[in-house]
Length: 130
Image (cartoon, rainbow, N blue to C red):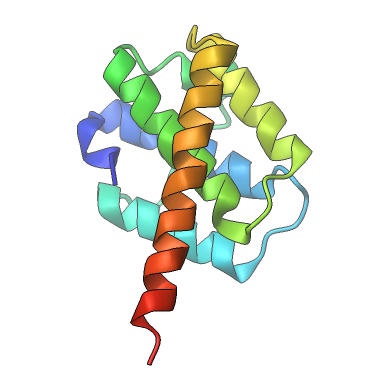
């Protein structure tokens, strides 16, 4: 949704972070793979090239507040793609936010927005059922 705000380097870094995110809990399910594929398609990326950068290195690619918040919104959204936000996924997001100099209060606000958005999308899907 907000990945168009990222430049090319940020998109590649986000794709690597997203791959780390879906692998964080040790269980990769089809819904996560599909969500990752959708995010990569949105960015026009076929593969993240897995350069093997650390989470800190990847988080350091994002320079502007706008790109940092956009990346965190999308990363947390990906974390909720399998319904639960696993503690290892939360830990990864906390590491990214810390490296980006996003405060815990700001991160909490970002996560709250994502939860609200996920719930609204679910409600919309319910309304669309035939």
